Structure formats: structure tokens, C-alpha cells
Length: 155
Image 1 (cartoon, rainbow, N blue to C red):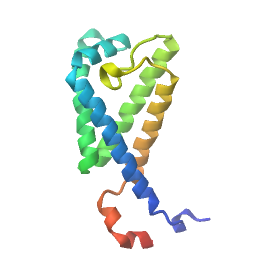
Image 2: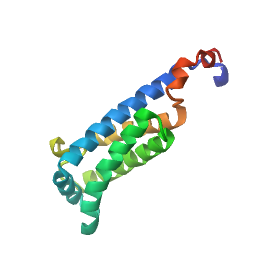
Image 3: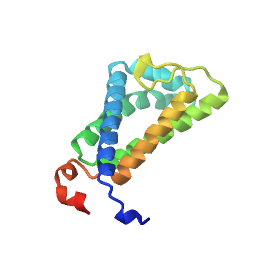
């Protein structure tokens, strides 16, 4: 079976759904962290991976980056760059979680602000799944207009 003859109109639709899901996740996580930057700074400090001078900068910078990624994914401006940044962030989060799970630390995740639970292997699987969604969006997303252009479905 040749893949180029395989009808795939659902793949761009699935990529759009993934893109919107990622946007919702990033927007919620970013807003929760922006509201209370002190809690995220404590969570970053507890991971014991950054030098002290970088903790407050990270606690201020990353939530705004998450909100910008969310806006970009919804609006569709620089969506490939946003998907690339999203995949890099999720891979970074997964790496940080893996390091601290291997260390045996029992610390708050900080993923969604102060309401986040302690890190566990489920969070690692979640971040790796979201990484895969980001890569899928990066490769297959064709944007909003694709849904309304029926000539592409005939191919």
C-alpha cells in the first residue's frame, strides 16, 4: 500500500485538534503561574537544577512564554515556531522530571501553578505524550483554511 494514495483528510483535522488542546494547556498553565510567580519560583528552586540567579528569571519568563505559545497556536501566526517551542519545552520538562524522579525527590511539579501535585511517573508520561502531540502539530498542521478548502480532500 502506498501512503501517498492513502486518503488522509482526517490527519490535518487531528493536528488542528491537537494544536488547540496544546493551546488550552499552555494558556491555563501560563495564567496559573503568572497569577502567583512566587509558587513557581519555589517549585523551580526545589528541582535543584538552576543556579539561584536564574530561578526568578525563569519564574517570570516561562509563564509568559507559555501564554505566547498558546496565543500563537490559536491564532495561527508562527504556529510552526510555536509547535517547535512547545516540543522543546515538553522535552525539557520531561528531562527535568526524569532527573528528579531518579534522584527520588518528592517535590511539587509546578506544572499548573500551586495546585500541582508531587512529581510521579505519570507526569513524565503526560509530558512525553504532549511532546508527541507538539511534534505531530509541527509536521501535519495545515491551519484553519485547510478545513474549508475541499479540493485538498480529493487528493
